[in-house]
Image (tube, rainbow, N blue to C red; front, side):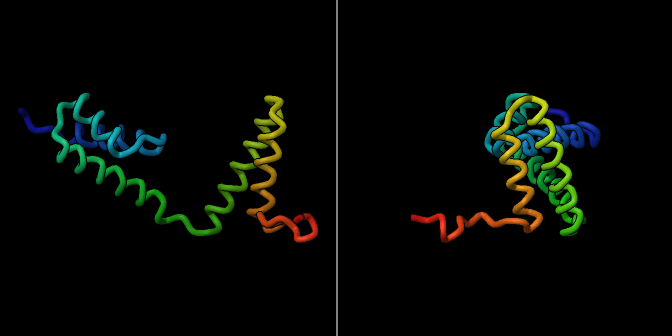
Length: 115
């Protein structure tokens, strides 16, 4: 079997990274790499390790304020989108998470409400 070019490797790592970020498990990604590209499990795991390296590299430079700003913006978009779609439960959920994130409320039920 011919060796993969650097471009092929980069494309494969990008594909596996997208799979991981979309919620696929490592075993699903290994199976995909084996079926799609005819790779051994060992080589598939190497490519997945590279994909995880890139994911960590994407996250490492973020500081707390960046992550909070992104989270607030995403929750606001989610609430607005849910409102436009007529999904009040999703609006309430997004606003609740936003409230907790901003320190306006906590996840604990107030003592006066407990039975």
